Amino acid sequence: MRIDPIVALTLMLLSLIVAATSVSVSWGYALGRNALKGVTQPEVRPSTTPLQVDQTNQDNRVEDEAPTDMVFWSEADILEDVKRRINPEALSQ
Image 1: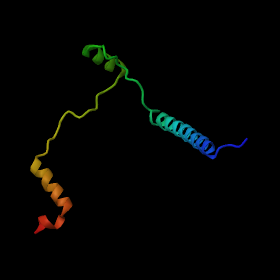
Image 2: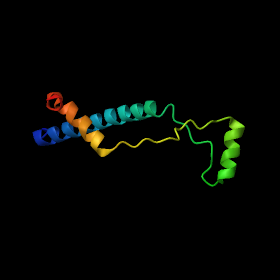
Image 3: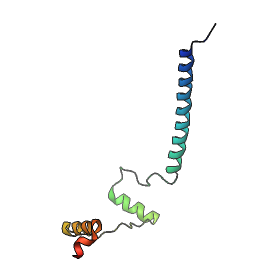
Image 4: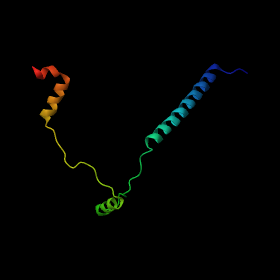
């Protein structure tokens, strides 16, 4: 009994696909696991009120370090900066 070449090629391609899939899955899992190593769940439940959140932050001595002052740039300043970066000689003339 002889093996048909088409069947052999099909089985070979199927085994290559399974092998490539398993390598891709293991690599993706390892990459995702390493990417999420430092990520933790938040310490506050979404159902807590703002008063409870403030109390939790005081208990854990967590300080909010987010900047409170926002600076908005004018569009003209942004466009001038972009033009200067694209063509530095044009503004000096």
